[in-house]
Length: 285
Image (cartoon, rainbow, N blue to C red; front, side, top):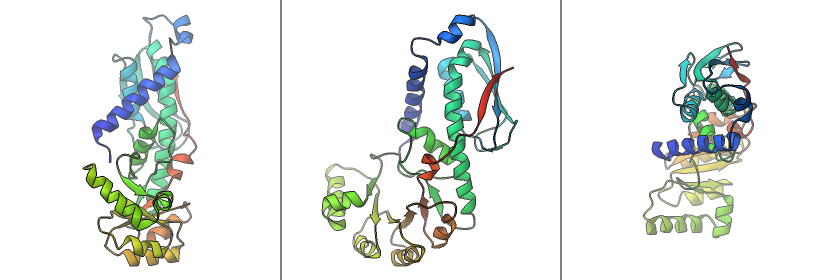
């Protein structure tokens, strides 16, 4: 996984790029009718229900736009919210509040939706030893926000990107000439380049799992698009030789059954690619 320092850099880049994209050479709507010295206050109102996420990010946005803005928080990341809840107040330059508004709302609405869906999956897994993971099926440019939201909802992050973990999927295996060829080439590559990265290998059937198990040093086997019955067989076959992960179209209706098969992890792209934004608004008062 990436370090905290790398993650912080990703968040800083998101803020910088989003403000550049939205403000450009100036927020002319505010500049045209609000005096530079004018001050005001606004509150973040919830018009939906779910898990709030992005409060800490909002504070970073306000700090970036204007270090003199003051934020008073009433509800923190990860807490349940309902219609009418007041998450925070922000005080200071009216122009600065308006310059920050859209980025704060866009990010928090999406992050809260992801945290809410993740929390629903986590609840469905209670009583099992299975953990929910996200994937790389994220919105380009804001992956760090979406993966942050998953952790706020109680889930765990899979690899962040292509550079922090080896994941040999079906195309890698086919392009390499088979499972053993892909694994052997990967180990040689890591050794030559002095890299210490965990290796996950995807299996499409029980025969491929048997072949993967002939190799040492595999961190996790991805049991992809298996039936419940074959997933149970796969878990028994793998035993404690390495970790197990189920994936492939798993949803609210099937996640518990897959967990009951005994897998260590379930990964779901739906956490980030199939959510509807939580309705939030920032209102002057």
